[in-house]
Image 1 (cartoon, rainbow, N blue to C red):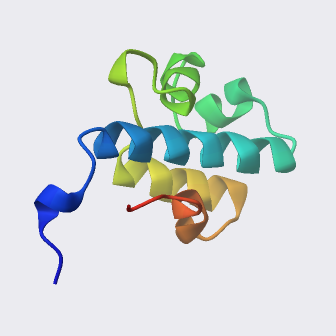
Image 2: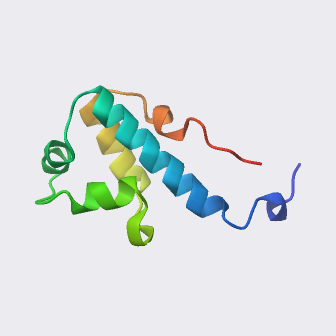
Length: 87
């Protein structure tokens, strides 16, 4: 078993950034705009989506948002966790 201290100090930031990049990649693959995704999730603007995709001001997706995005994009939620470096 590994010690949690072995994770880099910027692990959380890198995690949220990679998840945001994965959401953006999958959204673009499905040819869905930030606005269309925002509306599908019940938002009135793109701000929650655009901010979380680039981790702007530490905005990030929570698990409920990811589940809803997976549903809307018709992808498995695990797709958002690809290419995450745990080293």
